Image (cartoon, rainbow, N blue to C red; front, side, top):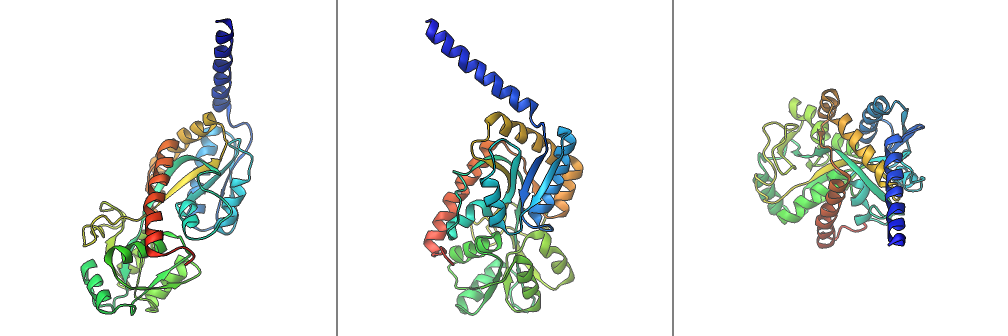
Length: 317
């Protein structure tokens, strides 16, 4: 009995130490690793870094690492002590589905918190004689292989959203790959391609000016980021949904108490009215979560998209 009591005391003591560690964290600057300056990841990282600096009373800085893979690999190799975090979209777990990468999204990272979700919109060039999702599907079926869609990098949300649309609609639309979503959107406005699935925020000005025609939003429910637009699901493809969640991650092995402390503080930051407003102004709906909820999001999304990748043969494309 004494042995059991001593073992229990050790466990309780260790738990108390870990919990205390979480409460005293951080004692030095924290960095949030993300992609190049100016992109959505960078903007959101900076808003959250400023909020956490205020909350912690310790500086939280943004560490921009150029291309997406470099940011991910930098965070994955960092010491798992809570002082290095990664802010990234769902590309973290969709990219490994379509090409070979050096990391494993589940093995190498500890989910901390969702911070927001960004829907895409289905937009077409005004010269295309369609005014609805059903019109577009009918036109594409009458002209197999003759319509083109603009896309940024492989595994990005505009790419996945378009391929999911093609797969569910049973249509043949040709992908035209650009160096990023921005150049692809410019190409669509110029009429080089006929359709695209850009973010709601990036397409808004072009839709308002009449340079593009918006048909539907890709979220499961109508979005305040695309007022007046039906969902793709309601407009003709039941069950369709494609959104880009943004989350914060720590290297795998980071103590649970620190992960939970970070999650709690991040939720407070992103739910501040001024932060919510800035997220919305940039086309993202704030969604804070527990580490467990982010892990469940990754699992469900990976399962769904693995099916798409396999059935549509997207690996390596």
